[in-house]
Length: 222
Image (cartoon, rainbow, N blue to C red; front, side):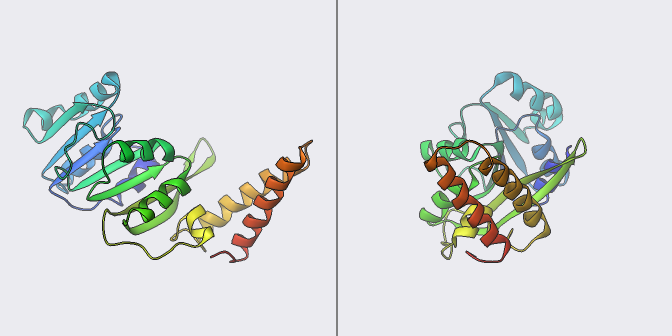
C-alpha cells in the first residue's frame, strides 16, 4: 500500500458497511476488513479489468460473503443508504462531482480529489453537508513531494461558511507546514508564468492569483 493510501486509510472511521468507489486494487477495502473496521465492504470500479485486480486481492472476503464487487459507474451500483461510509479517492474533483450529481451524497464520506477540490467543497457546503475534516497531506514519491487534499464529512448538519482561502485549500490546511510548502511552489510557478509573453487578460489573472497566494501565506483571506 502506498504512503498516500495509508494516510487516507487513517481518516476512515469504523462502520457497518464500507464502500470504496473506484477501488482500483482494493487496498482500502482490505484495510477496513483486515482491521475489522467494517463488517462488510462493497468495491466498485467502472473498469472490469481494474475491478478484477481488487477481486483477486479480496478473494477470501468475497468467497465468505463479506465483500461484494460491482462493476458500475460511480455510485450507480451502490443503493442509497446501503453503505455507512463511502470512499472516493484518486480521481479529479469534477469526476467526484459528476458521480454525486448523478446519484447522491453518501451518508458519511471521505473524498480525495486529485484536482479541483474547491469545486467539490463548494458543492458539499451548498448542499448542507457537515465537513468534519478538510485538510492536506503529503506523499514522497521518487524524491518528489506530492500534495493531496482529503475531505471527510456527512451529508447533513451543515458547515459554517468558508473563507476564500478555506475554499481554495481546505479549512484544516491553513497554517500548516504542508500548505506553506504547496503555496510556495504555486507562487514560484505563477511568478514564472508572469515572466512569459501573456495576453493582458491572462496576465491579469496570473497577477490576481499571485496576490491571492501571497495573501494566504500572510494569513489573509482566512
